[in-house]
Length: 306
Image (cartoon, rainbow, N blue to C red; front, side, top):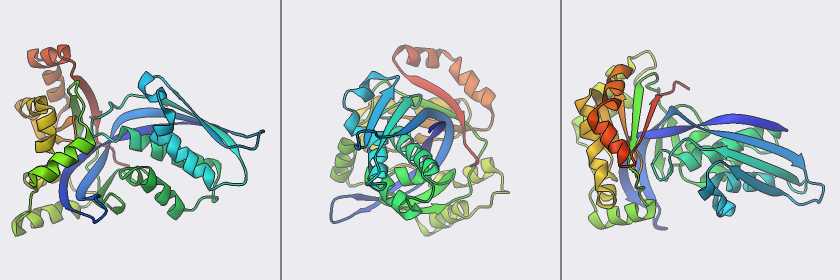
């Protein structure tokens, strides 16, 4: 059995830290939204003649092969296979990477979720949806989101998912400096700074209107009405690690971004635009050329509908 599937990246339209559990895990509230920036995953499964399940990782990027046991896609496959015991299988996962790492775009999480979805197709009904969700959460907090639709409100540590009508079809520009952000360090600095946004009653009303907006509403209008209450509580601690993140939002706004913000814990910043031509103007600017020479990555995409 062999199948190839695309694994989409995500952006966080907003990310608010809402507290911390006794076990140290951070609680959040965030709308995640998939975009048309993809890794490509090929999964091949064969029965194990030696009676032992094994997962092999192939990739076009060297750093993933340094220690495959730590790779999220490998962990997902191993946990899935454990549910099929006593039968044993050899699984080969081939990752072609396009989503930048240490970017806050969910590259590792979407890879893991895509492997789980493919394996579920290969073994229908043998792993329940609840078990699949449990495996996903065990692999990583963002993995359950990628098992679902295009957009969702993610709460708790990421395991509480409420579907949200997507704002599909909007041109997106991703800008990422050459430096990445360490997520553990980012969260540690957030705890030290202790700064999180608390919405007022009026802001809560605006947020509620966005979250419950219908699919027939204009996507650009929905974002425009709600952007005043969007934000990312992890921006400040991420800036302390990679100050150049702060260069991206003003540049995107200069070229017409309706809304721009850092995604996740960074270091990638996204901009939502009305017209793709505005992104093209930015990419052809002297500033963009200079940033590319400094190692910045630029990726064009669109928000997905499903």
